[in-house]
Length: 141
Image (cartoon, rainbow, N blue to C red; front, side):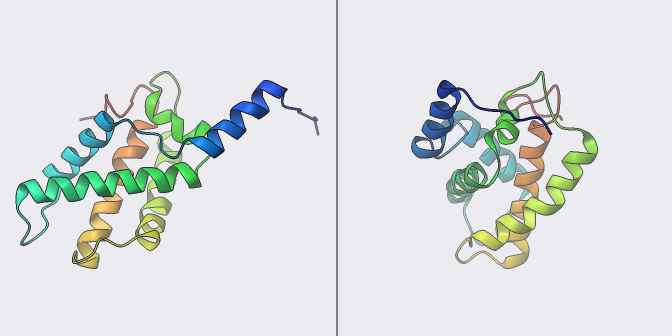
């Protein structure tokens, strides 16, 4: 096995990344994902403007959880169109992360089955952005 040692600059970058940054997505990317969720999912008894606010908050919280849970070298692929994960890796990530995300936080007053649909759809969008030739700003149709 090959020993790989980080340089001091790499160590500082990891420390800074872990200690100071808490999310990956920009406000624009959060709003894009929230709008896509809003187009695909209807929360009963909630007005459209309120739905969008709920989805923005949900995306922001999911972003923070994913930032803490996934190595940034993987999660950062949502911003990189030249590199990405394979279709089979994408399928595997979607199947695992949607349920894990649903287990990590609750959207009050939203039925569990709608919550699961929200998280699966959101993870599907994020994982699609991690594939080669895509990003949050350039999601597949």
